Image (cartoon, rainbow, N blue to C red; front, side):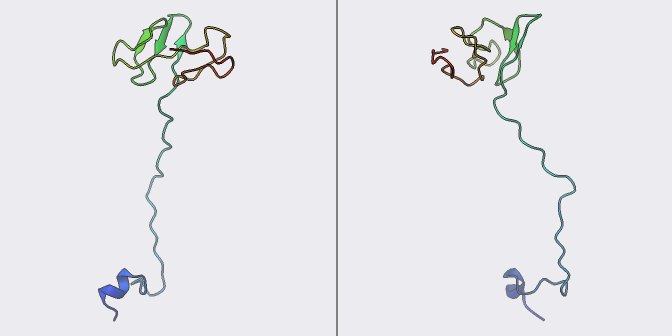
Length: 97
């Protein structure tokens, strides 16, 4: 018989050659990208906050629920679609805040 020291360092598996590697029953779900992009809804003129997902007026610069900055969905200069975390337009370089 081998002592605990040998088992801890992998010299004896305790199953006499049968390796039992158990896998969790469910795989971890992929993490959503954070923060999600702000979404503007054309019908209501509302935008979802990228931090708390609450609805705000489309013209608002800050979320009225959590205070996070709201980036415009499109650049005001060239119309390029923007990510919620963008500080500058990737197309024309204009500042967004």
